[in-house]
Length: 304
Image 1 (cartoon, helix red, strand yellow):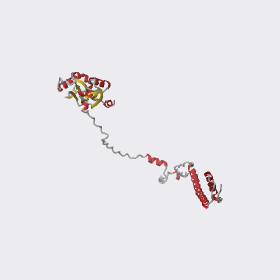
Image 2 (cartoon, helix red, strand yellow):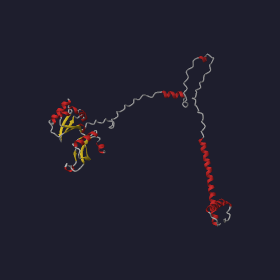
Image 3 (tube, one colour):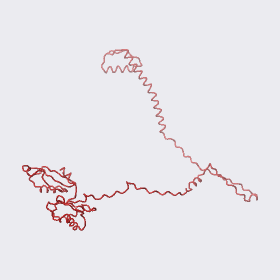
Image 4 (cartoon, one colour):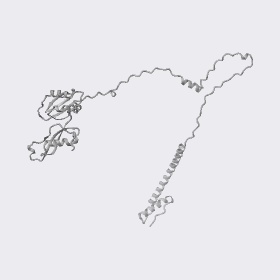
């Protein structure tokens, strides 16, 4: 391996590093050129400049660390200084033995107390003086805000006052007024305000202070007075469903029995009917039926 000319001693570190890299790269011949020597010397100058800059910074860091250590040390606690109130010196006059001196002397004028030196007793007496009683102004009544005002009670809605009785379609034996008086007499109180006949069904409207739920609980006391009645339910929102895939061999009565038996809380508000005509179902094994129910579980029934 042919080595190049020996560089100056200042850049010997970079020269050796250059040879190490050349050997690791597998270079067998290294030509010595002025450019390579200049490159090593430039790198040496850069290294010296770096060392010259880093040393002052290290000294500053050490000084700052020493100052932080001094600030972190607990400061010496000084004993608390107590100030004692100045004591007034009392001077006593010497006793005289002469008879003239034994006569009572006129009272001397009181010595005015110094304004500058105030004793603790004087300060305490000033604090004990009660301030003059000043009458407190009467608190004005706070106006009642709209937020704190009691909310008006919500009355019973018309839907909550209606009770619907489904009939079998046969003509009624009594008129609406006769039925109203008969049911109120059976209940021994005036529960029903009006009664209407619509579509073969009976709609009862209770008094303004009576909910239909309370009248529904007493249905056994008056429902036997209407022989045409089939079902009774509250005036709630109805849901119309189309049930597909029903066997056409089953009668509507069988389908109604299955529906009401295995779905508790479902009440039919209209008679169950097929969606298509009888003639179109002759050659079909399954068809669609239309049912109208009222129940809070109607949406769950749809998901089945």
